[in-house]
Amino acid sequence: MEIASITYNSGSQLAKAIRDFYSDRRQKQATHFKCLVHKMRALERQVKQLNLKSAPRSLDKKQSYMQKLASSIRTRVRLELGFLRKLSRSDTAFIKMASAAVENILNCFSGDHQQCRKHSRVCAGTRGIQYTHLPDNKAVKLSVADLSAIKMQIDRYFDESGLRQVCRLYSTNSCESLNAAVFNYAQKSVCWTRNFTALCHSATHSRTVGPGIGTVQLAEAAGIRVRKNSVMYRQLLANDRN
Ligand SMILES: [Zn+2]
Image 1 (tube, rainbow, N blue to C red):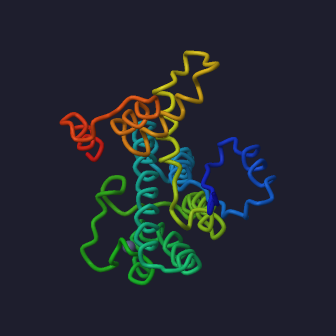
Image 2: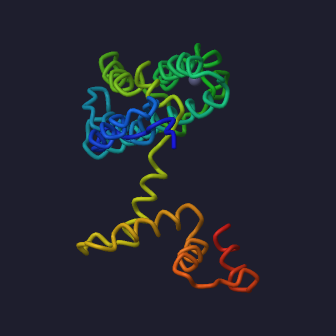
């Protein structure tokens, strides 16, 4: 089996697994990607924690202001990257356009839409622009220092090298969902000695082909004959497809 790419998030402890993977000389170099979802989540958290001088003074208002600002930046990044990925054939083209789009976000949020027509796939840059996604439903008014503080955080995650790490927009969601399935089968509260491998095997089957068919395959492997034309079998198939 040849692995084309590996996607992970910065917090995951994959170093050993990756070392083992490459220690097998037959393995070709796989492309490494970072998880887009984790990156966006980190950006939102960092922006939310910024102490902006031109944000509202009172603690309550400031909190909700920062929350809304951070989440709208995250949403805007996600939308821009999603549209651009569909438009661009090559990764290089994507990174170039995405870079310009991300760079333009703060201008757009501040009410300066000169570059939007050229660089944004979300804001048309024409009259009648709505700001309902932004705090107080209007364009943000922030000092130059505050804007550059936010820009620094955006660049930290989505500068050119950051965009290259997420250029296929891969995420670790499917992995995490498999993890959840494994621990559904083999609860963490039990210390497994012998059955853990088999339970992981079942979990993987159930995620790949659906829980119903997974069980049927398991039964067949154990030597139980399953009647494929029975009503129950068809019911299982139908359930797994939904
Ligand atoms: Zn705009």
